[in-house]
View (cartoon, helix red, strand yellow):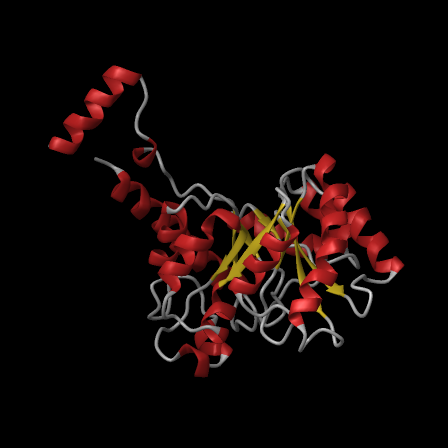
Length: 296
C-alpha cells in the first residue's frame, strides 16, 4: 500500500510513472540459425522464414555472407527481421582479415537494417596464446568497421564461443572497452557461459556487463558443475532444465539490457515446430511473469 501511494504521489507531482514500474520484457525474441539437428529441419531460407513466422518469433539470425541476401529476402517477404548476423572473422599477424572477407562484411553492414547487430566469432592462430597483442591488433580493424557502420546504424560486437579466440563474456567486454566506440559492444551466450565459465557469479557479471551487451542468446539448461556437462544438458528447449533461465533474463532486463534475445537451438533433436512452439510458449510465460512482478 505504501509503495502504491508513493507511486501515486510521484505521478501527481511529475506526471510520470517511475521507470522501474514501467519495465517490460519486450525485447525482440529471435531464433538462432542452428536448426540442423531437428528431424524435420527446414532446409531453404524460405522454409526457415516461413517456420519462424508461423510459430510467432520476431526474426531469425543471419549466418554470414554466403546466404545473407537469400535469407534477408525471405525474411523481408514474411515481414520478419534479422536482428543479428553471426559472422566469422579471421585475423593474423597484421590484425586484419583478407580483403575479400572485409568487403563481404562491409556489404552486409550496408544492407542490414538499422539497429541490427553483427556479432563476430574471432579466430587467430598467431594470437591465440598472445591475446594482449592480439586484442590491440584486431581492435584497430574493428574501429575502422565501427566508423563504417555508424552511418548505417549497425552495432558490432564479439561473440564468446568455446574454442575460439574469444571464449568468455569478460573477454568480449574487454574488447569492447579497447575498441571504445559507441556502436561496439559485447555479446553473451548462456550455453557457452555455462560451459566455459560455470554458473557461479553470473549475477555479478550481468550487473557489471549489462550496459555493454548488444545481444544475448538463451536456452533451457541444467545447473550444477556445468563446465563438465555436454551440450545435451546445456542446450535444451526454453523452459526446461534446472538452471533458472527466467532469473537470468530478469536480471539482465532489470539491469537495463534492452537488446534482442536469441533462442539457441544447436543440436536440439525432435520436431522443429513442436520444440520452437514450446520455447516460444515459455518466453510468453516469462513475459507475463515479469510484467506481473513489476506491477504494484
